[in-house]
Image (cartoon, rainbow, N blue to C red; front, top):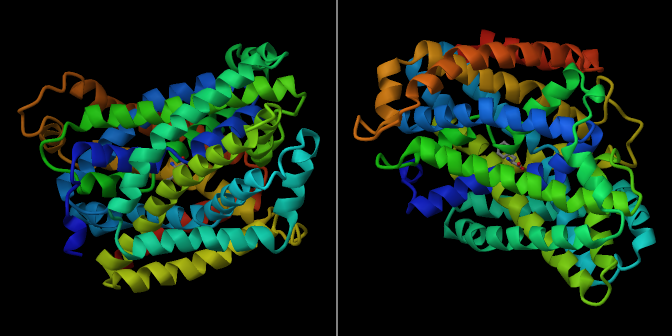
Length: 468
Ligand code: PHE
């Protein structure tokens, strides 16, 4: 507990930790395939709208609430009233459920490092089949998931120390460089321009209420918002830092990686005649193909790319796990190691179910979907958006305006010219906008049972708030 109230060593350290949390599978794995499944350019325009209008303001709000209260999510809400603790617990639950599938994909990235190096991805034609066979295998992906999860547990059990920050500082730039190389390489493949058109010429005919929710959910997921992660990180921040500037930097870094990933993937995808709608396998199929087509040391680049993907994922899942562990430590007084390993065991079980749901157990569904989709839809489409809206309502309607102003201007010593704009966006625009998008989008979720289950959890949490 004592140790948790430490502040970040440096501004760069904080930025890398926050950007490390934000930049992850959401940008490189999820963003491209979501774009592909939601019609391309139109999705990107809506996504950028969500990031600028909603994401940035909420990130500023999360930082402000965290630094003001000096507490992680649940505690921060509680300082205002016990009635609000459910909003924090909803966040913890979101983190917990995201960890029900995230490590599965993290495990894939580890396996693909080795696959690339052992030459198994050198035959372009076979790459799609290799992926399909791998994730459907009942043993291998489960083992890699466990290895991936173990690395997370190891780091979090010791406290998030210089190791992970250092890895972020070194590997994030490498990730950028590699994405740029892949992008440039992709542009040179004949037929690439169709991919660019797909990305940048919006086709509005495919847009539905569901597209807006998909974009909003993706924005929350990618920016690590709506679940208290940035509240927690903000709580370790010293009083000199300029919150709005830092939020802008984190949002820009995150968005640029997502766009770069799209740029790297789509031209090649079209050039190779692959399906943009193929879903979660996209990055695992397209990237090895680009490098395999280079021949020579191509596979080496492929391996480095997956190392970078693994690191990006790791710095994110560590933050997800940390939110759960911080809750158990702060609110339930469990010690760090017990909290970490206890949560880890449960996560391992959830992830095993998720992994098996893509193959051996694909027939087993709960409320209409397999485990992997269950955790994904529940968090991304329901919990995060509602969590974000609750935070905006909390900040806009329950906290004192002067306190927020004081926090965002560092006690009046800084200018934050857009304060009024920000405040009104948080107070009025976000609750209404997110409310509408969430209502329309959630109503359009095909699995009605799942939708009601998700909403039911929120209601139950709200009722038992005082016990949380
Ligand atoms: N932002 C991370 C990613 O894009 C995932 C994440 C979500 C991390 C929520 C923390 C909190 O992969």
